[in-house]
Length: 282
Ligand code: CAA
Image (cartoon, rainbow, N blue to C red):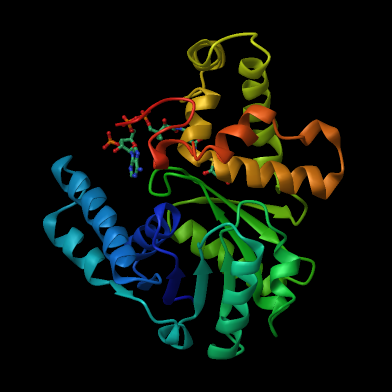
């Protein structure tokens, strides 16, 4: 039974994960490297819950109880007291390997480890710990409080007990877990990223403008966001990193990143978070 969880990384994904975990009644530690990152994550959660209160979906008391279950920290030490650690840090293999090595030395062997990676190999991350059977991918979608899916990725050694515990937890968080195996991009990004990349090629090759491509997919396919708006929302650096994982993982040219995407990332046009991507943001 998972009752206490540490979420490592208080960014867009980590703060959302901490929020839905606390909403499910868990005690949550939200950890980031600097107090200002922790504060920003807690601020986002507070704002989301305040909107729920304003819309009549929650009472002030419920909001206070949820916030009361989340403790911000810059330490990893409290992970030793947790049943599960969910990693949601920067999408870098080296950074994640270093973090899991450190967590492995801090936590007792029973602690479950999950990574929210969007495409890095779960099996490789698990292999630097003493607990590859208690290691799993728990891939939430952005915005976490809204999106229903959790892609649950089994590494080669993930045990049935670990899978069952994480599936039950995802359901307790109000999400729908879907079981997938550990191959590049899993299912979500193997299907999504080629579509976003193809939308970028349409712009790169001058077939249509940014807004035109988005309008085709929004109105023609009923997508809530056009693919270029969605790419900006995800982050163009993240899109490029995932496409590179697919390209290198399968050695198949169909996943080659669009040169326009590469150039935009080189320019620092990272999408919504940097104020400029395919669109310009205030
Ligand atoms: N946090 C919390 N709640 C949010 C939110 C956020 N960041 N953004 C929107 N919401 C809430 C809004 O408050 C609103 O709720 P209420 O009106 O009931 O209060 C609801 O979501 C709908 O928002 P809006 O009316 O402002 O706008 P919308 O109808 O366009 O919906 C959206 C926004 C849910 C983000 C929708 O545009 C959408 O579904 N977009 C696609 C998102 C998507 O594809 N996500 C997956 C990305 S891929 C990924 O995450 C994984 C990866 O590995 C890359």
